[in-house]
Image (tube, rainbow, N blue to C red; front, side, top):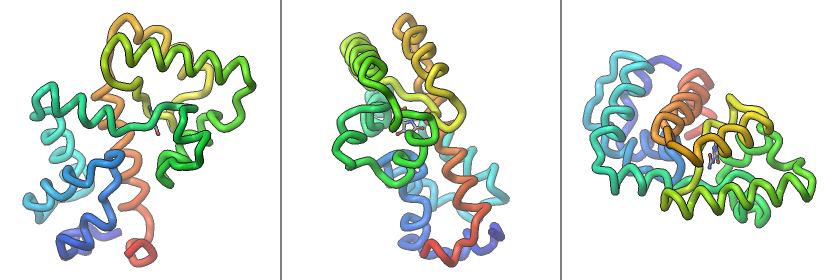
Length: 168
Ligand SMILES: NC(=O)NC1=NC(=O)NC1=O
């Protein structure tokens, strides 16, 4: 998709197209719209990263809390966003056996109790085994915001590198 097409979008169409590049945080594309015209896709990504990293810790934690647990209640209830559903199923979260589901529930619960926000990882870039390993390891330390910006970049590319007209 041509960056000039993105730059010509109304505010409403821009948020309609990019509103969920950061899970359930339409505020972020709504805020960076002010920075158009964008040079290219990387410029859009840079503005989103800058916005997220400029947030106070409470704001960063709020962004993390907008992410559904992997293999959590939203998945079981069928209430995931389209993007999350695709990402979680691609990472094997929809085909866990009962022991794996229990392990994910237990690790996610421990993680939220320890940090006060959910474990977030870019599911598209990790296998089921990677996710369990990272979740276990990160119970010791955390790099969740980097995962959010990586996740966002993949969603952004998915939109920008596809046919814009079909999404408006
Ligand atoms: N807690 C999470 O990491 N959730 C997710 N990661 C993804 O890539 N998609 C999600 O829904």
